[in-house]
Length: 136
Image (tube, rainbow, N blue to C red):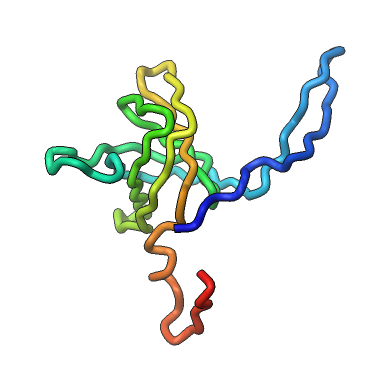
């Protein structure tokens, strides 16, 4: 497992809005607005009765994602998250830490997740016969 690098550039640039100065943080990685289905369970799974819960992604980047869910999760909780492609196949599973949890107007919740490792399906997408970097 690799650890994630900080998401925000340490230097921030001031922006002026109606006599008030606010600081805008610059993100290190691009974000994707694709909506995908996801399943998640507590990590590590302690009981067989812990069935996967469903959610959907938004605002996905290599280091994190926002997940829309039905139930709130504790900040700092570890989750095994498996994202699915449009045809329902798994893109891969990863372990994520809940960075924040906010209630939405419709009774659902938004989870901000820090991805702690690359999805396990990422290596499977390599071309057959292509050289693999041993440093990964």
